[in-house]
Image (cartoon, rainbow, N blue to C red; front, top):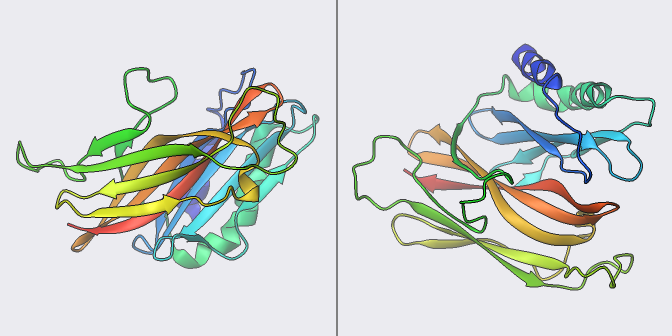
Length: 238
């Protein structure tokens, strides 16, 4: 856990947050207990209010569900700093993460930042290992976005469609897995306007890989589209 504290404290000084809309920054905390748990943080300055915030998500990778007591959401006032909110969120997360030991970093096998203009934000092809022979097929991810009714507080006259998504993983064997298919928009997503593949992180275990798939969640905000993150986890034989 001491390593966790060092990793996030070092990252506190790297926040570049001068934006019109609220595009959350991402900090991957890592995998715990041999890949049983995955944790990440999103942080930034809320548009409109200008209040700093930090949210830490802790996921049971076997069930692809949040651990009890999470996510941890901390928001300050105009007198607080992002660094203070990140420290407060980490302090709240430490008792939850400590029983799982020290964090370990996986391998980032897909990275599609919003600044990347040449990548397809809804499709990614990847391998989980460096040493696969040329010509051997890899895995692929596909996001399909489709309209769904949003919460009643989402305005209807701003020129945005509110959407859900389906996420399909196709393995190199040809097997397909539907990792998500929305039939409704969960209330915690507020007013979603889009979804894009952000990162895929692989953690190797004997005979399998744990995949953490991070999705950019675009939402209608006070000054345009805001960004938050969703994470889905799955395991594949390797």
